[in-house]
Length: 265
Image (cartoon, rainbow, N blue to C red; front, side, top):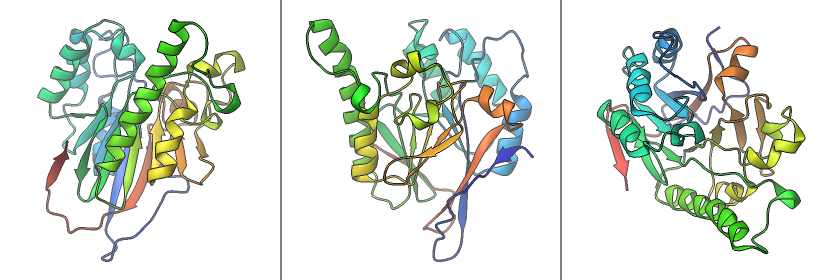
């Protein structure tokens, strides 16, 4: 079985039509094994209507690695939506990497959104800082306040992206987790570096149908927000341990299939 469809949302449209979303992240492509991802992406292309990628597409964030990663998508004809991860920032070639992805037709989101067949996708990388009472507070040294401000800025970007979507079905893609439950399984000492609960407020306040994230390689596959919004950790290493290639999730598509894809600024 190529994908996984645990407790998939089946919010049917008036005509019963569904849009199927394949989600995965943390491929960490470094170019040393060309073709390693082709089969996975081919399965997603066969089983889904949209492919979303939750960051860490490359190992070191170099443009040459991103060009190799794009070659892995050669058999993908469905729309692709992506956010970058921390590894994609390592080489300080973010702009070049984004250019490579967009030249391939990938919708790279960073505080913006896209509507595909009536379903909205809002994406950011996110940031770390911890969860709940353990979240780092903006107190003390300027460096601490600057660190926390990055997490706050990411949450604001996500809020703006969600507010820009005039649709009922909203899919959130992140790299960092917005809840602690999907990082459980990792060493507790690194929890603060795996996500930030500051990302949770816009998700629950504005509303989302589902959240996908990466980054926590030894976390948990599935959990939910306090309001019951499903959250999936779609890192490829964790999926492989479960015998999967991606998470497959279905949502009701409210409009007739026209092939139209509209960008929202």
